[in-house]
Length: 242
Ligand code: FPP
Image (cartoon, rainbow, N blue to C red):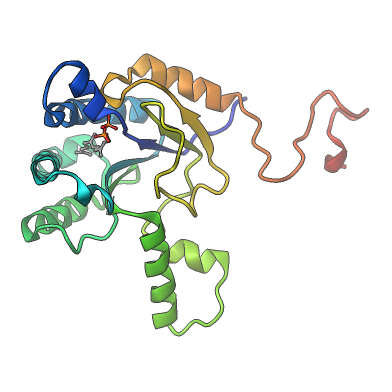
C-alpha cells in the first residue's frame, strides 16, 4: 500500500510565463491560474485528499507592479464571492493563512464571511494570502511570549502557527521549473516530500496530478528512521522492527 496523502500543498508558479508565451498581459495568466486552481481543487478532493493548501500571494508579491497586484486582489475578491455563494455545494472549510493586516477592509470582510460560512466542514482548503513563513514564525513566537511562555516545545510552535488546524503537508508541489520553497511552510515542510515540475501552473492537468500522486505514493518516507524492508531478516521485518 502507498503512502497516505492527507495534505497536499501547491506553489502555483508560472502564470506570467504562460501569458507571455501567448503574448498576453500577465493578468491573463493569473486568470487562467484561477481556473486551474478550481479544477485542481475539485480533482484533489475527488482523490480523497482532505487538506489542500495553495500559495496565492506572498508577502513579497506586493513588490509587483500595482496593476498586477490589483488584478490579483480582484481575482481573489471574485473568487471569495463565488466561495460564499457555493459554500453549501463545496462542503469544504476555507481558511486563509497569512497576515490579513495590509489587505483592504473589503477583502478582510469577505475573508471573515467565507471562513465563518464554511467553518463546519472537515475537508480543508487553505489559501495562503499575504503569507510569508518567516513572518508566520516570528508572529508565532510573539504569541507564545504574550502567553507568558519562556520555554517552547515543538507542539507549542505548531499550535501558534496559522496552520494549527492542519497536519503538516505530506507533499509540496511546485510548478514552472523553480526548485525552491520561497518562504512557504518552512516549519511545516520538515518531513514533506517535494515534487517539481516544469509544467506552468495554468497547464497542470488532472492526469499530471494523478502521476504526481502515484510518484508520492511509491516513495519511501523514513522521517529520519530506518525504513522496514519487507524482504530483510528471517521474520520478514527490518532490523529495527525487532
Ligand atoms: C506565480 O506565478 C503566481 C502568483 C504570484 C499568483 C498565484 C495566484 C493564482 C494562481 C490565483 C490564485 C487565486 C485564487 C483565488 C486562489 P508568476 O506570476 O510568478 O509567474 P511567472 O514566474 O511565470 O512570472
